[in-house]
Amino acid sequence: MNVLPEYLCALFLWGWCLSLGAARASREVLDLNPDWKCLSGGHSGAEQPAYGDRAWEPISLFSII
Image (cartoon, rainbow, N blue to C red; front, side, top):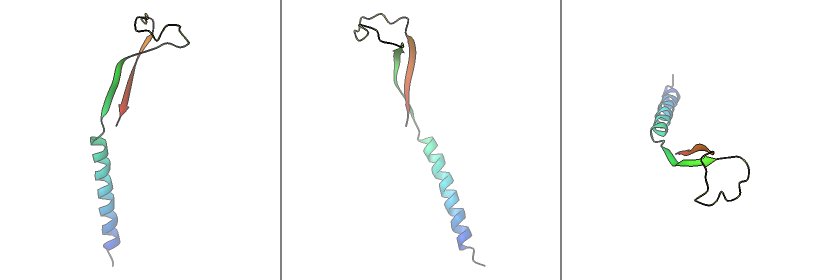
């Protein structure tokens, strides 16, 4: 009986499982900008820093690396 293919398959699966665990452990979540706000529609003057945005909905942007 030849056990080499079974051994290689088991070795491959073990290595694959280890690589999945390493990928999860190295993932990082980055908060790009917690102070974004959103409001539907066009608003004249909204590009100005002094524009009142108190009625706008706060949103958060993030990235998973």
